[in-house]
Image: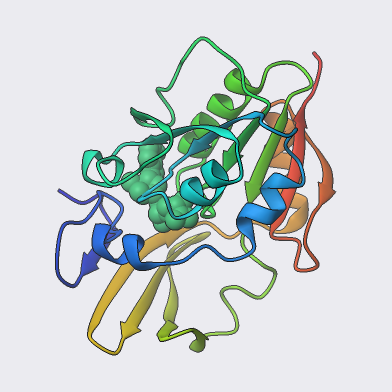
Length: 227
Ligand SMILES: C[S@@+](CC[C@H](N)C(=O)[O-])C[C@H]1O[C@@H](n2cnc3c(N)ncnc32)[C@H](O)[C@@H]1O
């Protein structure tokens, strides 16, 4: 059963937020493993929140990191290898341990409900510990303006078809993924955050931005502030 405002189309099973398990098994990692590796001590521990089918997990495990991969979808976790898997909502996760790096990718910080965003960030703080490192992926500056747009990754074409305001501050985004032999789509909700709003949200939740790691400022290194 999908969450309100979230849906997916195409063959196979879908997560509550509309991600296709089959699609995410096909998608290849981009620059993410390299960015994460550059901020994790060799052989260090990584907590990956919302790991999906292990697109990034597998590359990190292959690089020698000890990854704990968390997702609410049992179907996603069933295809993750080389990592400890934990089925849980991110908000409720409380493993009672800390990690060298906590990873909140896939722009999950843009969930529409600010209370849920706070829950996600609290889970990051809980598992990073004082001074701990949290790597967060956020949307780029023109993410919702430059629409429709299509990009190619090998034999995959990704089209952000539309981004429509559905209530103040919340947009419904529709994305299509086309391979020569199959296609999927996902509709999801996003709360755009300016850089200032993003930094304020982190600050309210005990996280300080240390650095923007990519020229488009979509990958951010934050650390847990001491009270
Ligand atoms: C867009 S997919 C991305 C997966 C992976 N991070 C990647 O980049 O390939 C998002 C994943 O996060 C999971 N997810 C989203 N919100 C979640 C939450 N609140 N708690 C646990 N899992 C969540 C979904 O089930 C899905 O597998």
